[in-house]
Image (cartoon, rainbow, N blue to C red):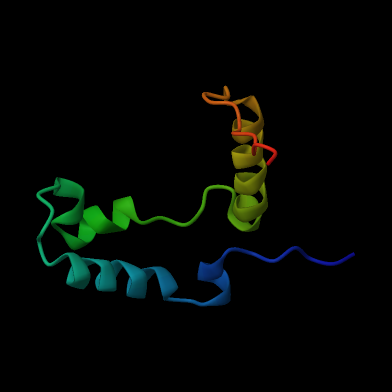
Length: 82
């Protein structure tokens, strides 16, 4: 039996630390949000996926379900025949 892949942090040790550091650099204090003002706050804000390696597939399924269940606001426009 094949072992399922893990999320990126286990495949690329230190990846989250790089992403967190770069996020703080790019934001440069622009947003006045407590969770983005300190390294500790960013560490609580940028986290590994709770669903692990299944996050991408399950996220796609959730989006598809939402799209199917969404009400249609305007019917599609039909092209007129010449």
